[in-house]
Length: 220
Image 1: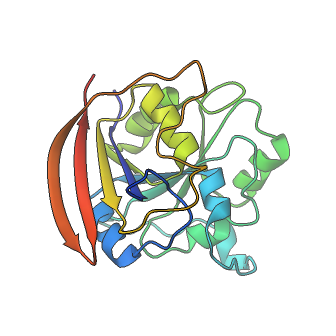
Image 2: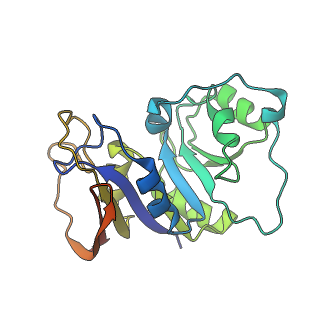
């Protein structure tokens, strides 16, 4: 068993994920309306986020105390190469998530695993040389009782999830701008591996500020 997976993105009408500003006051209420048990992000997306990372403090080195009746989602990050040691504490502090779960592989550097253990981060080893998303989703379902997961990440991880047939629904917030930067698309498989993925339109609506929300079911 695995969670229901919703792929969520803000995208321009010409398919780009980058090169323009997004009104997060429109985007994130839609994402959170799914009431996810977890939000998934890749290391590339985390590292590219336009945020200033403050220095780590002693309080960042311990897990948050458990809150009775906790309803905030976990932040699940894919980081098999161990690149997020300088930023994880920032995401542990976020008020909208309960804490961080890191997905790693058998080949993740041992020093990074020690870093996670020293700071009491939850982590799951799922895959050999890189994170296997199917194994990871199964473990998240079994170990953390995650039933609904929203992927809020970039084109690389989106493409992996879609190509593996692990996405149940796509939630797109269409921004009112044609992006001049088209190097990162929602779905961008390697040449020779591309295949069309048929979709079924489930919802379409004006959500204000020039944005449109489209919801597609992914046909299997």
